[in-house]
Image (cartoon, rainbow, N blue to C red; front, side, top):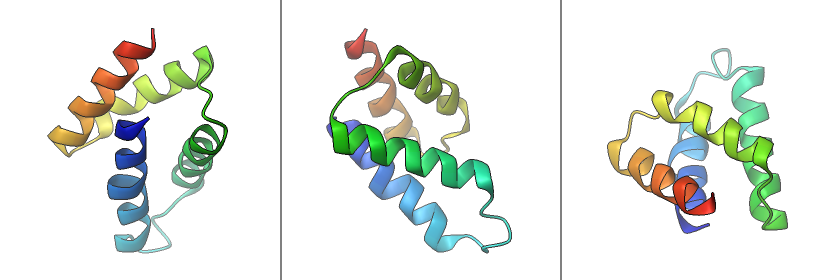
Length: 76
């Protein structure tokens, strides 16, 4: 979960703070809400894993992307 928390704090939250609110679209908010739900419950469903895997190509920070990918692989 540490990698997911890092993705949330260092990527999703920073993106929201740095973005022009006009560019911070519904997809970004949905992603943030879904990750918040996972972190709060501590449970990751297969759908959540697939969803998070679909985000990997769009994560520009190599360290965060690699950590999240390793975490997702361990969840299998």
